Length: 313
Image (tube, rainbow, N blue to C red):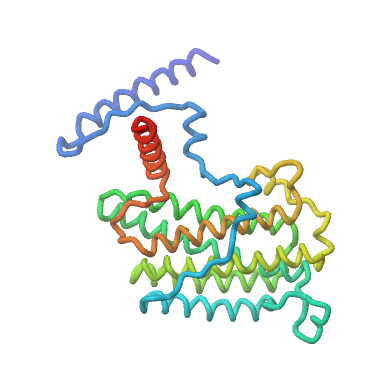
């Protein structure tokens, strides 16, 4: 490096430091600046990345379909909307609610591997919208009101990221046609606009809507798993899950088939179902019980209670 270049870099560093000090001295005194130590450790980057639950075989097999009874008018509005959308999605993707039987030709058309993939892609392209919209609107509200969000944003964005990973996984198994892409584009534009407006009006109804939507997703994946177990999806019997799915869910070597993939995704959908139904019960200013901080506090409380029980003995 030449002498002139070294002098130039030295001048730049000194000048930037002086600018920083001058700028700090001109900041109004009514702003309280937190004193924090900046870290460039890779551990910090790992902790700040999106978290995702890693399921055991017992956990994915224990997932069951469930339904929350619509008791209030808000619940009925959310459930009715989901049923209408479910009917439209069934029609567009060629889905039927019947499982193949020995006489399935008389009842309904069977669901092939291609039909399942088409439905999964369309379903996940829509399912990734609510979490992002809700997280974005709460993020903007937090900035606008200049107050904390109490852990909601993190959970909502994690949900959107998780749904996008579902979509990317299925895209490794099939290439959607241009017709399918235009359908997804149109559905996303309409759903994004409608859900954004609805969330501004009533976040409670929107979270209940997502909860009911995830109920339907659990049912859909459960039927796909049943078709797999009954031998109606022969092309998937010996097919290994995509590498990105194996890495994302940390699938063990002896459980990397398509059935294990469907079980993991169904467990994710069941988790989203329970989370959104819970958020639908809360006020918008309540802390999020699913945030990392709340989970740590709950774990510490359980440890303290167990310690008291042992000491009492």
